[in-house]
Image (cartoon, rainbow, N blue to C red; front, top):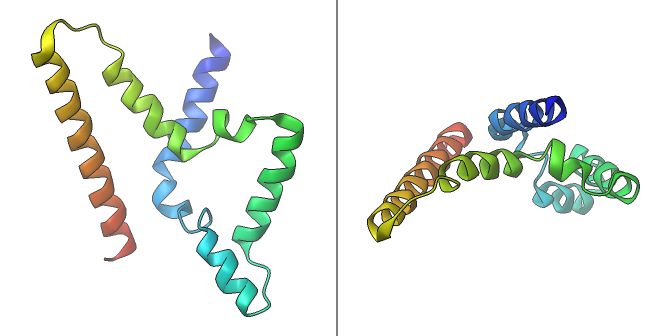
Length: 112
């Protein structure tokens, strides 16, 4: 149980830092750097993730991936037991509003 709390804490912190780290997770940076003959930090991150996944399996996905933070947040909403179609609609609308707010936050942090 303690291990799961540590994992969820790491995932939550990674999720909060996602607007900052989104550029490091962008393959576009790798292409732009390669066109200029530069090895970018994004390329180094993807290389480290690739080789660590050969050893650790899905360690990054289970412990540090920002998308896992979004999934854990959605799981807390979707996991509740409900009856009837109205409650299901409420869940869908709630998750949709969360996604819309998150996308708006990411766009504002980018300056678009």
